Image 1: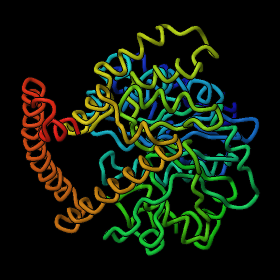
Image 2: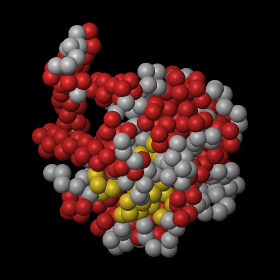
Image 3: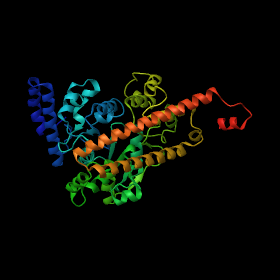
Image 4: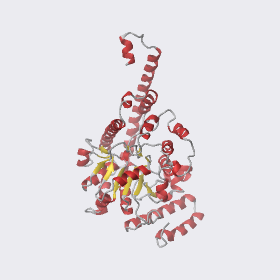
Length: 451
């Protein structure tokens, strides 16, 4: 609860009274704007006030999520709060950063129901929406800096930076962090993104690779202190993020850490899954690993997958009995044996794996399979960044450029979808024809067909 002497505690009764008289949307907006100003004032003056909470002790692990006011993202965030983030939130160890809402987004959120109205109702205490951060791609690095700065001011032993589509196995995460505890500056994550790309992030990332945001990353307290207490302090850090507006948050954070000689450490094993295993069998294979080897972070998680993982990991039972059986949740998460794909090609590949399996993957150990998936993920991410940087060079970084980039991306995606649909149709027809007219056995053609 807020301290009795805090500015927020004196203003809230007045604002709450006004909410009975004003339009609901205007009242909630007034409350949020006042809270943001109070939190910013408290943070700037190095107080411990945080979103109306004055923690009695320094948290061991503080979970920070970068998100957007778009309703689809808010639905995922709501599911996080219903599953793995429920306890950290109750303990004041969870917050989310969004950008400034446009008038249109405010109307959408105010008219939303259930998870969509989350921002305006029961979970407004977890949000920080700095007035200087846009809620578009231009604002990604601004929001990233805010996550870092708020984490530094809260002074946890570990700050864990995530997105709204991550599922976290909290007990496993905190057991790993206890083992990695050190007084020396340390950053843990999934490394390799940015290496060898044509993007002008910083030389250290180009040469060695940086943090891959898909796996999440963790800064210990000593690392946060070294970032914000180096020469130039907070102003220097803010400037570095501002100069990279319109680029990638994880790459900018990697450069900020590397310039201050903070070592980035790759977490070995299966613990960080920055990609989606796609098939239900792929997820279950990882879940069946020994507890200290299975993933603690799962990326690209849909709300249905988060709820299934929560029950499959037995975490739901730690709080209250599951509201649906594991089997029913699995059917919702993997309606055709697949989930979390981003293109028609990924879906088609997943369907083939779900039906026929993968001889290559089935012949590998869990560690080998993980390394194969990781290499493919990093290769794909770096190719994506190269395309993004080329587009930024062509269009620039203004709002008009962002709109032009979006239209160009839509045209490219439409062409890609058409090409993938034709390819999928050809493969489907060829498979159907081959199954209906297999060659006679005993001929070389038969052997080729079977192979």
